[in-house]
Each structure stands twice: as structure tokens, then as C-alpha cells.
Length: 140
Image (tube, rainbow, N blue to C red; front, side, top):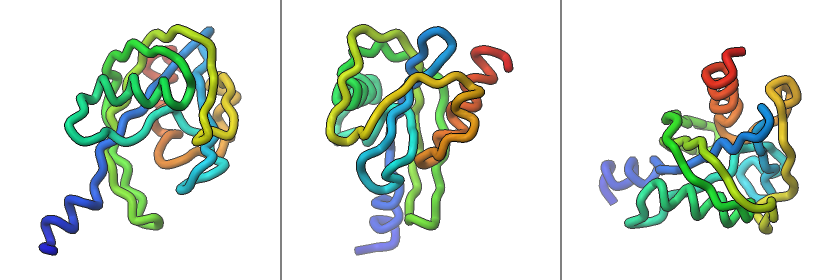
């Protein structure tokens, strides 16, 4: 395997969803490694030949049972050498419909305000994602 192939395999493309209700965002607690027992926005890997908007709709549906209407929010670099992880995360915000029903990847879920989320233990670079959201959307 050449260097280019090895590097390419290390970099992942993922999606994340910011689902907001009453100035609180929906976070899920991971039931899988890496970062088991840590909080994150719903999301995951983009599958082969899958459009990003379809990926985020699928991931939200799988993890929360909600139907999600995505609107692009921003992208974030996740470089975490401790776990040999590098990803580009495309984050979407949007409206949702339905009732939360978690799957086996999710231990629990909760709605958090900025203040409530401040001291949570987060997976990946999710703390940066939600801090930017609260700052840009609610201006605090």
C-alpha cells in the first residue's frame, strides 16, 4: 500500500446535526467506542456514493428517530492523534419532526442549554461545534 493510500484511509468524511428546540440542543451520549460515555451531536460517517444531506438525514433518523431537514452550518477539522483520527465534519442545523427514539449506538439523550452543556465530557471536537453554534446563532 502506498503512502497516498494510507493517508487517504486515515482521513474520514463525517456529518453532524445541530437540532435545536427552545434554545437548547439535542445531544446524545455515545454507547460505542471511541469516546464511549461522551456527549456529541447526532451524526456519523458518510457512506460510499452518498450525498452529505442524505447522510445526515440517515444518521439523525438512525440515532434519534427524528426526521431532519438539513441546512449547512459549517465544517470543522477533527485531528485527534491520540486515537489516530482525522476527519472533516460537515455540520448541519435544521428543523426536525417526530419523537426521539434512540438506537443501540446511543446510551441516552438530553436537551442542553449553553450553560448546561458547558461542563459535559464531549466526543471528538463536538465542544467546539456547539460553542460556535451558540455564539453565532444566539449571540452569547
